[in-house]
Amino acid sequence: MWLDHMHYSVVQPQIPYSEAAVTQTVESNNPEAPTTPRDTAPPNQAPGMSIPSRIPAALKRRIPKYSDLAPLMQFKKPEFSRAAKLQRASTIWDLRDMAKRRTPQAPFDYTDGAAEAEITLRRAREAFLDIEFRPGILRNVSSIDLGTDILGEPSRLPVGIAPTGFTRMMQSEGEYAGSQAAEAAGIPYTLSTMGTASIEDVAEAAPNGRNWFQLYLWTDRDRSLELIERAAKAGNDTLMVTVDTAVAGARLRDVRNGMTIPPALTLKTVLDASYRPAWWFNFLTHEPLTFASLSRYTGTVADLINSMFDPTLTFEDLDWLRETWKGKLVVKGIQTVDDARKVVDHGADGVVLSNHGGRQLDRAPIPFHLLPAVKEAFTKDNSDAAIILDTGIMSGADIIAALALGADFTLIGRAYLYGLMAGGRAGVDRAIQILEKDMTRTMALLGVSKLSELTPDHVRILGK
Figure 1 (cartoon, helix red, strand yellow):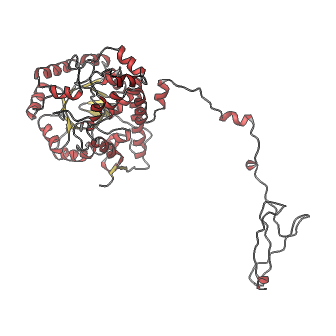
Figure 2: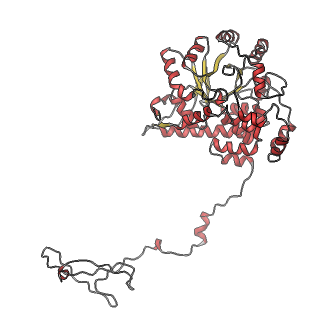
Figure 3: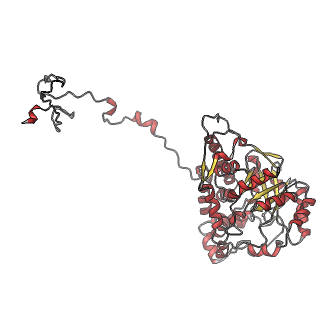
């Protein structure tokens, strides 16, 4: 047969002598083929079989010794305290999950929800997801500086706490927790006209903090003037006037929950309370809700806004505010480039690009998308007015992206309220810690060590 003259190898499995493959060689008549001497097999070994190399000791199976296992046994005593749970929270979303478990549905939804179909809120959050970071490499990022100046004063971080209404309804520590956490973190805190603590009490709770006051202009101008004077006397250096609430937005979660101020004890809320007794105990055993601007109110949020807020506001009212208020003046609720320019022309020191967290007009412009155009307009106008951004921020990476695209500063509302509902003052501290850690890591991975090094080249909005 012609196979007799071929040189080939045959692997024969299941040889009893060894698990190694055995090679049988057949001579070839090819004169250029190397000659291979036949193996001389030891006793009990078939010719052509190779002796396997020794198996490394590390690959041999053995019964482990206790001395080997001891270093691996790192069992910790389970911790179920609120402090331990807060420390295990790695993201703002983790705090949100904790907040939802601890807070009755009506106040949680008041915080978590938005207007109508909540399209604006969803788009605002998606805007931060639809970006691509573009990092630089081989930069010295051994030290990261997150400090900045905003409206003439330093802030240890490029984020402050936004004004939120009815805050003690979310958790009994409310504005006191927010202002004290901001003071400890070295960042501004903004008290809302609809806050559930007075201007004076917040100033007393955080005497060394940087306190701002947010103003809704009432139909009663004397009441508005009284608030402005109280804010100045209490040491607030910045007045933030909100201009996107001519009427109340249709916040359907509140409607469906029968949300009232204060929360009403109905059959539904009593049943809900049975799962969250700590919230109700705190709510019922602390001072009843009072407000920065009025002593008591009973009714829905929408009724309050529609009865007391002034739908006739114009730029002339902004001129009046500029003449009346001697500190920094910021206008919140800017949603177009033209309006950003106009309020600066009327004396504003800064603008807050905001759609009220999606809680007013559904399908409103997204502040993050508006940001580059406003920055370009201010640059062309040689304006040094501050650009502040809120809505949709849920991580430190979101903040860094906003700063790269032109924001001077950012504000968080829901993000800190989730921490408040999750654990009071300690929860707000944890929310700020999470954001700071996020920002530090993102900066380092981008290859920048200070905020002034961020540029639009570090961020690309996908699809544009």
